[in-house]
Length: 387
Ligand SMILES: Nc1ncnc2c1ncn2[C@@H]1O[C@H](COP(=O)(O)OP(=O)(O)OP(=O)(O)O)[C@@H](O)[C@H]1O
Ligand code: SF4
Ligand SMILES: [Mg+2]
Image (cartoon, rainbow, N blue to C red; front, side):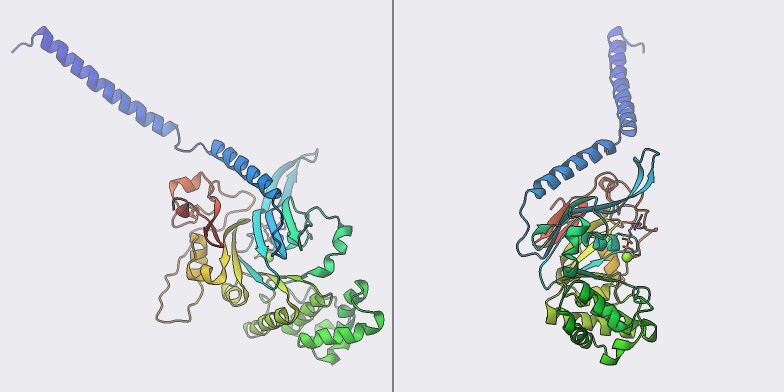
């Protein structure tokens, strides 16, 4: 049956409506494909502005009177390549906006994979590297801008124990000379009391008095590390940065050195920044723990809180590898995919997203904020931003 003109017109109208709908759908799909859900450049600029605002606001805050060391937004960037005019072309952000606090007598453990910036952070806090940015309050004084001359007066209060006890002792000096030299230079005691003072420190560090005349090559790794610890303590410091102090030692010796560090901490009210990649050691010695990934702190909190309830997927993966002494408690090992990316070219958004088992779309584009989840327990992960 032939359709009337009205019916034909109505069919055409219906077809037009359908075509428009299809066109719209095609257009919407095309727009969705060409316009990403996140504008990465805009997000980065927004994040940068917010960070700078926060840094400026924090600069005005007075230092925490309860903290021996308070670090705010610390940065250490190494310039890898420069133009002929000296303008940086490529930089490596070894430490990128880290904030920590340590109270007198506390131990803060720092963990993270090789290359995440632990040593650089420790050395920058001691001003062995000049910081690129941030504040370092030591006993309430911001030392970030201190000159080497100003730092000389503080050197006795801040010491470091290195990982390798073999290369950190001069081979041609006796133990007595090694330990006496800093005591004389910094005039810790009157010259006629130096030997007696040094012998006292040696005894505290478990070194026999007849070692005084001996040379470093005559000692084992554990004894050499005791000498290094004695040398650091000889100038009566308040803060000691222990950079992997037991990693180069046999497992049987490690416990002795850790126990020595704990004993000395009690006797001398020392404050430790204890760097290690060995979580069992860090758990044993630390009051608080900071977890680093590619130059940033991803989680920070009390040792118990962090071990009982690790929040960040990176911390969860690291801790799942620690052997559990309780055979009834099964912990599923989380194996991270891929290698740690280069800190010279870290991933955009959350730096961990390329390896994170919980990564979401947003993680590729927007860096998560470092925020306090529970009292004193900080984390940087989008999983906790909605709560
Ligand atoms: N002087 C330097 N110049 C350029 N890059 C450096 C310098 N010192 C360190 N880096 C780089 O900074 C990053 C952090 O190094 P750092 O030694 O602090 O790591 P780490 O966490 O202590 O590693 P490890 O556990 O192996 O000791 C690394 O990529 C390293 O190559
Ligand atoms: S922000 Fe995303 S990628 Fe980063 S740790 Fe959290 S879930 Fe993983
Ligand atoms: Mg290191």
